[in-house]
Image 1 (cartoon, one colour):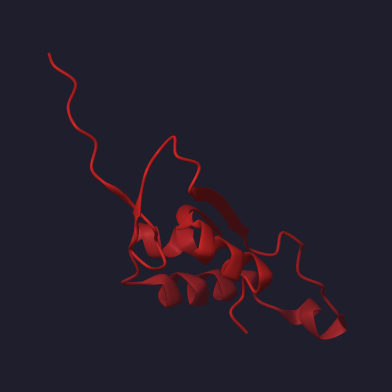
Image 2: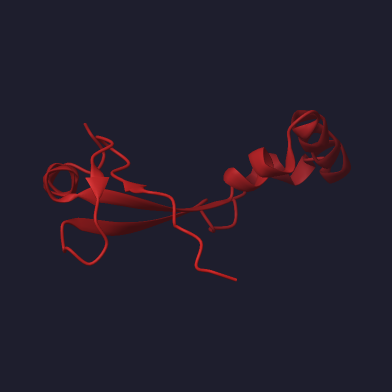
Length: 96
């Protein structure tokens, strides 16, 4: 089977065409995780009805897709950025 052509690689920020092997772009890996710290409980939480809380959470998740639920816990993505976009992004990654 002959080599199938790869789809063009473009900058995820400005859509500039990127050329693999030319050294004109960056690959950025981002991994986001929800706070892994167990919730802190105080004296008012002792009366918490755990079963009712689980039911409340299940009701809150009703209608959400598996992907939506997973995105609230863990998300991993890869960006391809041309040189100018990378330099702009790395100086201000949150855009704030």
